[in-house]
Length: 421
Ligand SMILES: [Zn+2]
Image 1 (cartoon, rainbow, N blue to C red):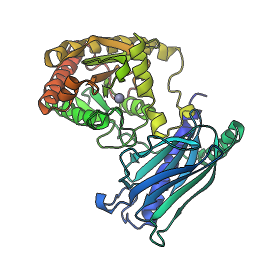
Image 2 (cartoon, rainbow, N blue to C red):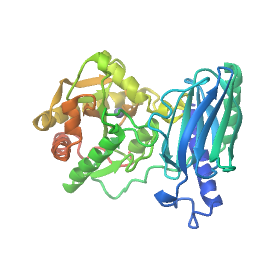
Image 3 (cartoon, rainbow, N blue to C red):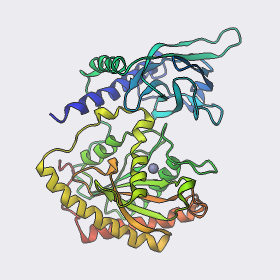
Image 4 (spheres, helix red, strand yellow):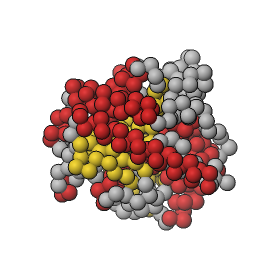
């Protein structure tokens, strides 16, 4: 049945959690349990990384100020090698990972959860991890993490993944989202700041990351929505950690959300010209135009970037009943998009076509009206100035909070109780 893939995928995250918990306990950092995380300045520091070799055999090395533990696994479609390590502070040269060598095309690194960092290597073809180990500092050389990769065929690559999956299949997943407060019947608004941790999102030419801009914005919006006292607000993340796309949807559904608002800041490749202004997106199988399709593809890559296994993406949606629910949800989503645009145009510049739709995975909850707001383009000078301005953020968050209030006033207030699914 349709839930099986979710169990497999969920198990992978559980194993990850156990891995980190084990490391924390092993390091005697957490006398009260695995939740304790050491102070920022006590994390190991990654200082450099390099890739050497050729298309048959490639070695990846990362330097650290002390020896750390590691857990390595591989993912297909696209081919990736993922290295989970305890939370570290990455102090690598600015362009580290942007290009590779031999079998490694590029690599990324960052936080995936409190206590856990990750390195994701994009590989050009199926590889076998021949060796994965860490060594102590010695003879003036720093402690190192070493991966030896060898080219292999797809069949061998997939067989190894299947073996790894067998190991974790028996595990179950811990609840990520807080349980809803059943006694509180106020509508629940879920705010979803895009990206986070290892996935930075778009980047301004001046260096600001989308993940930071949208988190700050979402916090301002949350404060405004909560101030009225009429709604509850839940954020899919409140710090710089990565949350898989399906988990964002699941957090909203499990908590009985009445509305889901994902917040992003787009960027346009220079060759495609200079777009500007805010856009509100709803879900559809066919995109409004090629630009919307490109954007959805870009946003849907978040899990690939963070090393999540796409083939075990849970199939939360099945059956005719859901299809019917979806039609109603879709209509609510579009109505809310219009409310948003109506209010936002008083506060900020909008894109020349401010309401669009495309196949965003994060908007796929069949029973929660959902929109994705691109606040503006970090690639556009004037938009970027707005995005980085406190007064613009406050003004625009005010407008969005008003739109949310107006949506509930005229539509579904009270008809969606918490925990309805
Ligand atoms: Zn984004």
